[in-house]
Image (cartoon, rainbow, N blue to C red; front, top):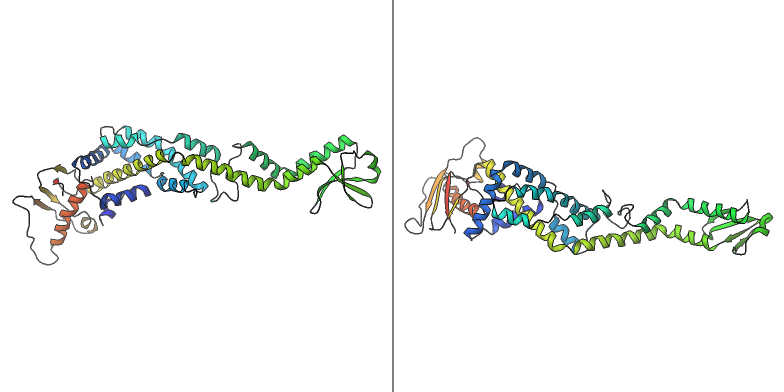
Length: 367
């Protein structure tokens, strides 16, 4: 198909846009020529074209990503993909600046925003290789939120907290045999043997009496228990809240991301046209207004690529709105009559989507 021939796009956005280009060819000579001049500029600067093509390989589908962000279904990996893409944008703009002789490329360049602010908040908050979902935690970077860091420290160092309380209570009460234990029924408790009962402070709350010892709790120990046991659940809830805040902040910038996505898609298609035109030796068509179609050594863009051991035989085409409104095509079966007719249509279509055409020369009026 013609889509198969012309599709050297590097992004999903460009691939979708190319299809719509082909389905909806332009009718405005000015817009057609803007695209043709843009393709010509890209072909004229092979280094910029090569750099842009490489950069586009690292651009994710930010159009779809932004939709998921808006509908609050974006995953941490989606946000990271947006960040990765935003890192490419300054370099893309740098290459586009070299092609300022094209009015269309200049306009597209102006509508590409580098998204540094969005990139920074994502890079600061989301780990480098996040999990698919935020529900299991491990998405937000250490150091981004002090409360989350505190909870993680509690989860990691819970035993150290209890040991610190035990040491402090020993020093405060002078009870050398004091120890802190834990069971599922009572949670954390301070255990004091009978020989030290006289040193137990009034602030201790008796919890359990055993044969040779008493078990107590303190408000500090109870708070530590609640902190340690609830730290994981609290950390998950807090991580979810932080992630949602980051995602919702990105959603407020939807307009500039959409403009950027649209411009990148257009650049991708124009680069595709340029690369295909170089590879297949296409020519820039002249867009004229006299109603004629004049093609020298035209070729069928699809059929010529399907031939393996033969060379496509080029044909001239001439039609106008006065004396050559119709051509009568004759010849035996399988001699190329249908190919010739389709070739005429495809060359006109290619010209009207702003692509170079398979011909030695072509002057095309809008149809």
